[in-house]
Image (cartoon, rainbow, N blue to C red):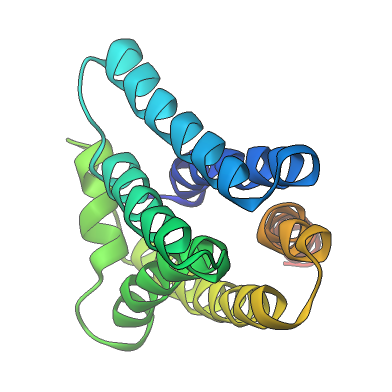
Length: 188
């Protein structure tokens, strides 16, 4: 799974957050959670119709959304719903951590599913490992921010941190990588 695939897989998980914040603002927490779950299920159906298969990551994200939302509604506390993005990211942190800091590169193994028949040389393997290390810390930092914001900040601040801030952090990293690579290619 490369960086673009990872972002594409995370994007559907962020839409229910945005829908929740809007619905919560106008209709209350329980309705907001219910609408967010409905959007998550509709996304799952959409991806099934579009791709004629159920993507494991999307189904895991939707199931986690349904379970944590159900707990939030039963306990009349939205904290479980708010922690869902952090749970997903912490799973990714574990995968990135194993890939970045051990001899077993799960990211490379997962990416080969999408790049069948493409040989990955040693330089590319090293680059994937380096990117996994940086992404590990970005995802870990972002997960901790989500947890903090879920407990101690407003719904709007939590929604910004859970969605837009993620893309800002990843975008800044991509821009930095592009600029660094251009600089290095000019000065070699």
